[in-house]
Length: 311
Length: 283
Image (tube, rainbow over the protein chains, first blue to last red):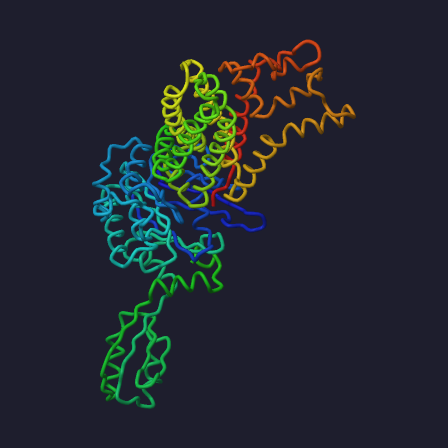
């Protein structure tokens, strides 16, 4: 059974189509990163999965339950970290978690959950005075109540400092080890690479790419760069480098030779060629294609869905 | 059954606000303070009776509790929509019906607790200053006050569930209060004038006109109060519709029927609010 499955899921607001015929499948036990720039339709999709917004057309299931007809059963079995949530300012962090435990009929210990998210010292403070990061931690503790089979986390690291984001990732990993499926949205790529089994990239309400991260990179023939800082650049060196099959482009920038490679395993060969030309290399810098660049390419270039998915 | 948790959380949240304490203070002041007035006005050497003290209480309570009920209730749901805490509420396995129900119960508690405290303090004052203490009548007035609180909280929560912003909720609540608690008799008169070409007198009135008057929550609650409390002089001037109607009193003008109207004032606003909230897109 898939943890999440949607079939032509569509939501229109007036003339605007926020989500356009989405077919999504999140497998049991995987970590799925749901990516895209703001306004791409990620939150609308999540709102439909949670029953906040009814779909205009299409259908979906979460853990086998229908998102329209069986929303309560879905929310009983999942943990939700919502986006743009507000807290009950006059209630303590402990009371927030306790409320989630009561509503779910779970037998968790609120204090233990708050300790897990690193808030044990603030457990009895009223949430009104909390920073964004602290609120995010309370919300995560609430999401963890009842050992949910699926965690839906909407922009989980927003408001967290790098340390907090790392703790968030380690909690996500622990949940996956326990057997949970994790579905989370983000508009920041770097947090995703380390943790996701698969990613889906949304743009204008459609899924423009969906795959494992390494496969996505391969699909795009992602190019790595080698930057060599040298003392001199002989005239014929660039010409010679361009004849190498693994080099797709090269140019000089100050005292650097920038070499664009379509096969990153051929770096040694390139360096040997440069040294054989009698050039002394002072420094070597290597740049791997980042997911960030890939993301930018997918969400800003004119890449159509068929090009990517069909590749 | 998760509305129980919502009601409890809502009451706990409101109970930590200044509002509950301000309301408690206000109601103690109202019940205990106002019941002192007839004692102060009484001529020297006489101790006024219990009925004088309680009779004086009725109108201020009848004005204060509706306002308190509306103020306590109108933000109940819409403020959670504006702050985004509704995402916690509905991300957990609560239905929207649980939310509406839990809010009405929780907020009614917020009005009821200060009311009960106010009446306890008031009882002490009345026992100390007045001749005799009719426990049943006093409890009747308390029960009536609690019922009135429930009605206005239900109306306000219904409004709160129906709209998407606090400003709209405030406007609708104010509009409701002005229309039904201040202007309603004039509305009824205007209808009478349109139909009959003259203004209504005090008695010998057609049943339909008195029924329109009776339809406001304040009027129907007053009719109920006559069945719960023995007011001094209530039998002398018959303010009930029965005394003003021309001919036979139809069943819908009898006091028991006011219970039906009051019940509708609880059920209909909540029903409309629930349906609108159920269909609301929370994005």
